[in-house]
Amino acid sequence: MLPIIDRYILQEVSKSFLAIMTVLMLIVVSQSYIRILEDAVSGTVTNQVLMQLLGLEVLQVLGPVTPPTFFFAILYTLGRMYRDSEMTALAAGGVGLRRIYRAFALVALPVALAVAWFTLDLVPWVNSNKAQIMQQQKDESAELGMAVAGRFNEFSRGGLVFYVENMSEDKRRMRNVFVQNRQHGKLGLVTAAEGYQYTEPDTGDQYLVLVRGHRYEGVPGQNDYSVGDFAKYAILIDRNGPEEGVLPTKAIPTSELIGSDDLRNQSELEYRLMFPVAVLVFTVLSVPLSKSLPREGIYGRLMLALLCYILFLNLQAVSGNWMVDGTTPAWMGRWWVHPFMLLLGGAIMLYKSPRMFRVLLRRLPGMAR
Image (tube, rainbow, N blue to C red; front, top):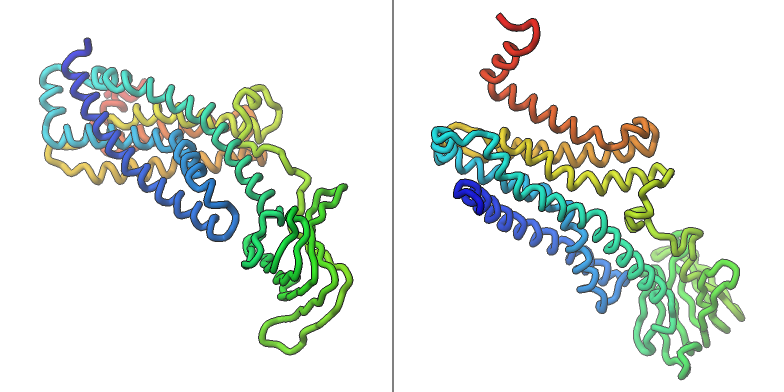
């Protein structure tokens, strides 16, 4: 059974962690829902997959959100304990930093393992499913058989709008078609007696083929419209790129990244490992960063910690670009970010605690007086 001091610290950190996580997840869910809803309005996704994509977004952010949540939970808990003189009472009772670190290590290690599972296993699975859903939505948006007769149908984010009076029973032929599309900055209007979808066998590009109609092209507000008649006219709906069906790097399973010679794959692997390591690194930093005088406000320390974590996120992104571009050697990778943050945290503590700085100078070789 854990000592009462350890149980008290873990209980306070757990409450702060749950409260901060709840707020952050509400913010993330609301922003994700708005973004997915915008995609639905623009026609990129259908209403049937809205909640599915939202659930995947929630699972995707669990790994990146957990380290800062745990970091700020420790900062807030210890900051409140310093403000209420609880840390002073514990120090007077013989509870030192080693005991405090031991209490946090009991929860930091399980949290780091959970984050490792999130980023190494769950996040690639989520990204793979999202890629499959978006590809399916793209294929369906290009499938004119999904069009509804008697109303305007929008595809390609509004780049193609057409109206079909009626369709054949097999949904393959459209009759009395009106089409609006934009090409080379000019708005084109097409009317045709019939239409059908055609897929180029060599490239996989999909076309809407119109039969026996008229085309009007020009710029609204100007008089230089061109009018033409045609027996058959094809409009490109979707162009399949050479990378069709290839998973993005962030969706590749971690087992396939291990041992890869590709710098992008190595960078992605190290990126996934940075989050569980960040839990341990910022647990070490949180204890000295939270130190303050009794009844001193804790929000200044929280702002300083927030700036440190923002710097960590920026270095995390920059380190990946530098690694892929060759700015930093491959052996260095992205691991230098964590030691840099530890050194920065130590420098901040020395600056904030001149007495500690003088003690350190006295202990350095050749500096004793």
